[in-house]
Amino acid sequence: MTANNVFFNKRFNGYDKDEVDSYIKNLTQAYQTAYDEYNDVCNKYNELLDKYKTLNEQHNENISNVAVIARTMVEAEACAQKIIADAQIETDKIKVEAQDFVQNIKEEIYMEKVAAKIQAQKLIDDANSKASEIHEQARAILCNAQSEAEQIIVQANMNLGQANESIAQLVKKMQGLLPPNLFDSVAAIKHITPSS
Image (cartoon, rainbow, N blue to C red; front, top):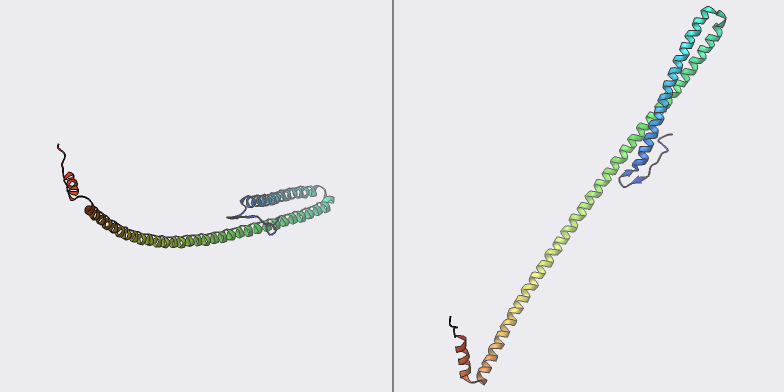
């Protein structure tokens, strides 16, 4: 398992968190397995050394077994060294891949944050521009409404003056058609104050 051929699905705010967590978990397990194998090799190496010591002690008792003991020791040493070297290479490889993967994730997250910040600022600028435009439109509408209202009031005053003038002319005509004492009686009635 390597980090170079692993791809994650992207969401709005970056890589899929579950996939990243799963990959890191698998990577950690692989590293732990390599580390455990390394410890096992070390233990086997120590066991082989103990065996060699035992055989070396038996050498003093039986000189004929010297060649067998020496061959066994050499083979055990070579095998142990090879296993240890292979385990160290695999451990270093996993460590480098993990570091590269984490660095790539950090860079991706940083770029996502920068892009999100730029997008947010653009949205804010657009909103402010739209608000200013709406404010100017509202001011123009208000000015037009005030102007129209003033025109309506002027026209209403003119109409009211014309109406008053027409009423005065109508009253004047009625005074010429009706008996003069009728309007005097009406005026007198208007000034009567009710008794308390």
